[in-house]
Image 1 (cartoon, rainbow, N blue to C red):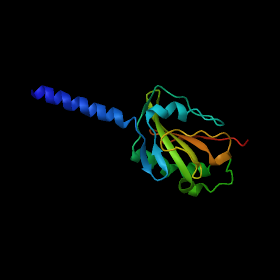
Image 2 (tube, rainbow, N blue to C red):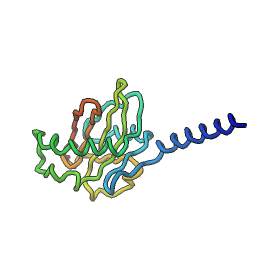
Image 3 (cartoon, helix red, strand yellow):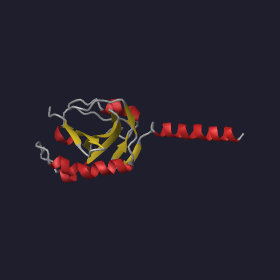
Length: 156
């Protein structure tokens, strides 16, 4: 009987973990970690380059997002294209969606950034906007090295 209870508890726990990855996790008022099922949509943007999908996904946590967001403004200020945006305030002006991507066995966080006035179901589904300029961009963050790859939307 004890082994049946243990097995039931294990199956319930694993089902809970799997379901957790199927639901968005709102990190703050303006940021959300989307489920791994949204990776394909997130990495299919209309007017900017995106990283390769990789071989899998994972669920970033609030600490991973905080690390990325702490480093991002400095990286943005170093860009040759400044798009006349105040990069020091980017996290207070932009909504953010994140997914975890696994490529070559390494974990990355990909962020999709867009102006707060962009209205839609952004808390549940990846947003893709054609053109829009530098206010719309993607950031791939390598958790191991702390390096970023950035890509900005075109201006149509």
